[in-house]
Length: 295
Length: 295
Image (tube, each protein chain N blue to C red):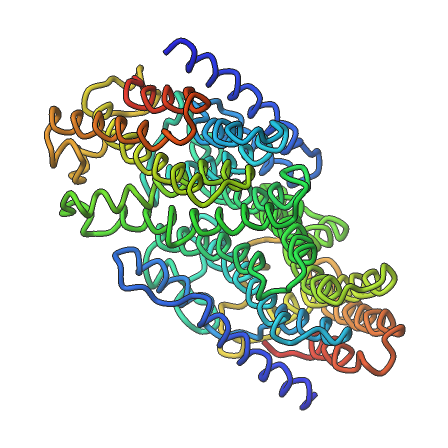
């Protein structure tokens, strides 16, 4: 676990530096929205999605500089979604990564605009030749992100999460919700590496299924942490979902069964990587990390 | 003026049909957000931006089917911006095009997500070969839209519009605000036609300047209508900006001078089109329409 933590930190630092470059401060009157975008994007975090882009791309010996650009674009989309989800009209969260959320530090309007800006500019980052010299690769990355983040993916998942029926969802319903809300972007992270690496259909599929397994496990572990942790450990309020009467994996399965399901998913995720043999060891360790993380 | 109104209606109908295709209803639980996206995008309106894409592309004999796809993508971005701008945290508007705004018909969360969905999917529409068979053209369209709609364009303009200094802006400040908030997307509409048509640098520049002139004139006329019209005529509340103490072109220049400035801009816009000779007649009529519109 030490190696994977070091690897995550190393990648996270590189992503932080690239985001800093991609979001330069401006002194003109609209600079305030750029500050809010930077506050959100440069706020640290595990950077799991960028890490997955970079490690899956590394399977195909993609130049790291390209993978980093794509990783940064994806992280911009992830950060936009956090800024919007935290708004009072949505999840109404005051804390994120142990700091005030954007709408608490500024206001709702700035948070809406900062999210809009991050989302808009992420596509520009992918369209730039710095993300890959091959135009078709860049277009595939853009199409994939649009699909994963739109109404058939992340936005659709958040819509279900806010629907009046949310508290009555059964296990199938919760699984689908999470597959859209968080799964789609995690899957895209791994597919982006495959796109950059011009993977074979078989390799693409393997990474896609790996991502699906760890994405679901990630969410189950989130529920477990929500039940078992303190706000100090996770950097955000805990017990929120169950307090809000939302159906969760833990609520449906119980603590023991939920943990067992997450463990099975992680085993399955690792087996998806067989075709990459030893080269995928860090991705296997990532799966373990998703299971064992404490925040 | 009769011809231009007919042309606008014809193009608007085609855009409406394409948007209807691009945003199919889904019956799954997240379908509600798609309904809200459709409500916003299919709500009619002048469709000025799509019209400009199509008419500028027509200068270069671009296949209409491609221009229509790009026009629809741009309109999705325009509609997302209206949905977010109408939110209580922003301009707090209850009416748009004579109907309830999305957050009044649904709620704030749905409006935020519907806007996010439209913005996200617009980039997917541009990445699709249906917008142009040439990958480099599609990437240029995507880069341009990202720049025009992001923090250095539309999002930045809205940020200035909401800033505490908004009421004290001088003429230069208001002009810059409008150049970002509405000008950037109108300019992009004309540049998109030039990109689709693989215009020469000289032709590209001419269309860009034409768009800049009509974009500013468009906003001055908006201010004039806000002072002179009734809500029945415009389909939205009037007198809003001046009542809110916002500095406007009319407030800075007076009614007469503001109208005179708009007229000069329209003359200038028409002169930009000289290199296209008779082929650009409909674009000249569009400039006249921008000046003489009553809603």
